[in-house]
Structure formats: structure tokens, C-alpha cells
Image (tube, rainbow, N blue to C red; front, side, top):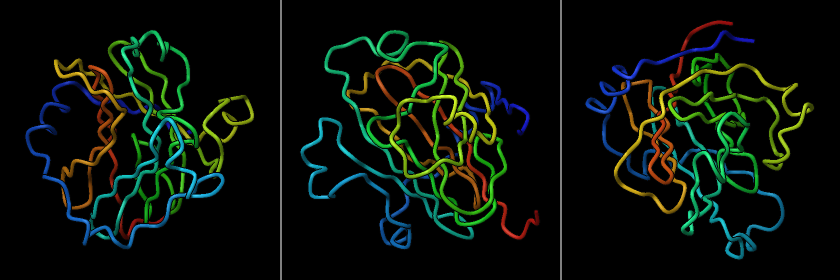
Length: 202
């Protein structure tokens, strides 16, 4: 298992300053299709909308697939999502990420393909866990699920004045081959670094 990877708050602020804007849909058309359990036609019936985000990097597209629970007036961080306990980082299916080449996700080195993510939130930092189990429901995060963990990294949790009703994930490019996966819900923002490693061997 990879050693935990940490990013200082100063680095996070620098990323905010240099991140590029969103990439157009034409650049991410080649992204692979998200897996869903059941019929795609039934997605519109779910309480938590199913969504995805993608970013075109060199040399390929990174994509994340997730569902978006709503705040609905409830206290989220530290309450509905308890601190110190594994959280699926979404709703319904496990939140999944695809990388086209060898990459680092939250400091964890992975080979090309699909992975799932979950988080252990804290008041000041989150631990982001990369898991090789795919095409699975997001809960429970049992011992069997954890046995497929590849590693984890810790990232700062930043309090923001703006309240976000639906959990929202998007990519903010930080370089030609790198981006932050930004996680926003309620008044919390977290940035998970993703870096493609083209040409790097095993």
C-alpha cells in the first residue's frame, strides 16, 4: 500500500490560483461510459441525480462518475457525513474514476483503468482512498471492500462561505497532465490531485 500523501494548505491555495477553466465537451467525447446498476432509463427516478465530470489532459481523458445527494436543509459534514468514518463520496453506486494511462490519484500510483474512491472526512482534512473494486454499490464499505484498497492520501478540507445544495465534483486543470478533482458540498471544499504519468514504466 502506498504511503499517505499530504498537501499543505499553501499548495492548495496555489492550485486555486493557477487552475485552468473547464474543458469543452468536444475534448472529452472519448471518455469511457459510466457503469450504472440497472436500467439507465431509471436514473431519472433516483433521489440523487447521477452525473459525471471529465477533463482532457495529456495524453488522455480522466473521468469521474458519481451521484449527487442533496443537502435538503440538513447539517452534512460532521453529522449526516460523520467525521472519522468512511463515506462513499456520493450516493448509490460507488464513485468511480477512470485514468487512461499510469497515474497518481491523491498520491497513489495506479495503472490505466477504472477505480473507485471513498473518503474519510475530517474537520480540517480528508483521507481519500483509492480502491480497485469496481462496478459495485457504494455501501457498505466493509472489510471485504477495504481489502481492495490500493492506498490513500490526505488533503485539506477548506470551509467556504457559499453553501452548495447538491454534492458537486469537477476537474480543475493544474498543468498539461494534471488536474484537481474538486469536491464541494455544503460549505466544504476538497481538492484531490490527479496526475497522468505518460511513458512511465511499472
